[in-house]
Image 1 (cartoon, helix red, strand yellow):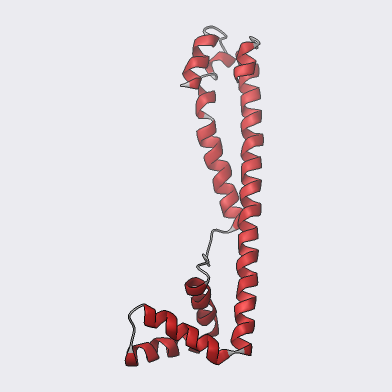
Image 2 (cartoon, helix red, strand yellow):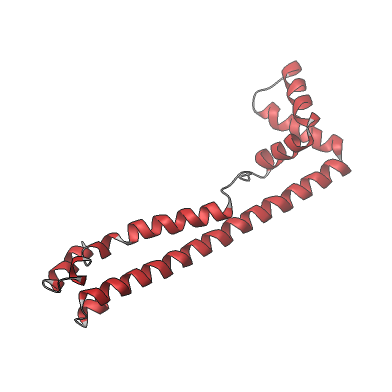
Length: 153
């Protein structure tokens, strides 16, 4: 927008250029967020696979890890035995507990498409704020320079 104002382009062209850049930048940010979130999901999936293999190969060792984790969280005696029994009785819960406690991984992050859409919409909303002052100039090119400073502010 600064370049368009500096070259004294009409307000309508400034609005079109601003909206084009806004859409392109918003799409770029959304695509980047989508890929990042998808990669996070793939990493957690791989960590789940590794934990699952470890439970298959060394179940007593993995059960002892659960015991130690929860003993460190102030469980003891019969309560500790019950916690270990409940967690290790459900394979998915066991894997989730290991990933969360041992690897400190966020297990349920946002879905990639939702994260991308949220990024795109928020980028459009907040990115359009500086552009709003120029919409009037699309009809009336008077006071273009002063509107630029409102846009900057």
